[in-house]
Length: 499
Image (cartoon, rainbow, N blue to C red; front, side, top):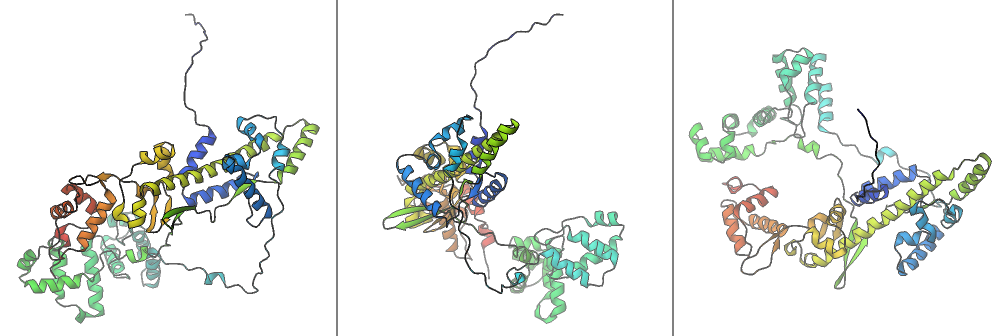
């Protein structure tokens, strides 16, 4: 068998994403916090980068120069770089690096002259620690008279709690693993269910509520009226109670409707999710807006939030490094400038990408304000239908770019703080020539209608459809149900209140 070797040429086109382009795309979808972390990481890893000191006089001069050059039609990235920077992007090596770095040389940062007080408060006085549910229960277990084996079982139970405080594991599997008696394990579990908060470590709602009743009855038996009836309802009629079928409960218990109502009111004082109060103690995550929208006269002004965002430039220290690299190349024949060239190129691309990111965010918000001007004047009711394509065509970018820009970005406006994605929503056709309305404004109308209903005669989904038609909104019943569930609003049968 003979093999023949041939050469052939084939011409084709394909899209190749350079590392710089991948970096620019990645920066677009980063949140503000992620952006700050990324910049701080780059400051550590790339010695060519340094943070601009806001107090530096040279910084003000650089900023003025940047504004003047931008006024001439340059982008900020081009204005920040000398005219020979295109050689960096193209990868050419014949470039005067010393002259390039010299252009970024600035005076030494002004030292911090603020006086530090002689006595500072203790660190412990500035930090507060919240106790989570498991830690709170571990402390109670350690203070109890449990044996060593019982405490080991308790640790396994605590390791299987969800955020509501329910035990989601299998007690049978745990006792097999640690060699514990099942009946004794049940007693330990009941003991833990009567710890604070009452009903924690329960396996279901019935067990949770009964444990709380037992704790309350021991504390003050007289405060609970018709305790036996309440226990019977929890033990056997939770489904009827959920469906508000009070007639079935009165028939099964041979009690009057008034007695069932009175007991149900007492039941509302019990906590079906005992662990939630500790879950809410976790640190609150605050939103820092990326953009501020202010009303100035009859127009709106858009301001990017640059506070806390490090400003970058090329380090002037590397002027000396380039001198050393040239001397080393002459003495040893080693071209150490390749490392400097790579880091410098990365630094320039990062600065350019950050500026392009901020510029794109600004342009997107500017377009949103143009399309949703009535929203900023009147609120959610005036929110118009808007899709990514409209804004993309307006500023001349692809829809995927708008999608990335609006991810995890927030704007503070005169009517509240919203994620940029909030301004994009589908439209619902109006009636009799009325204009389309946004889905978010329809949700708001549904919420307002339900808030004004009679609790004893709540609006059904079909009734909501009719009320919306009176406001020139044509919407199907199943869509109303979908929006209502999205607002975490119960159905009319479950919203109904008889007392």
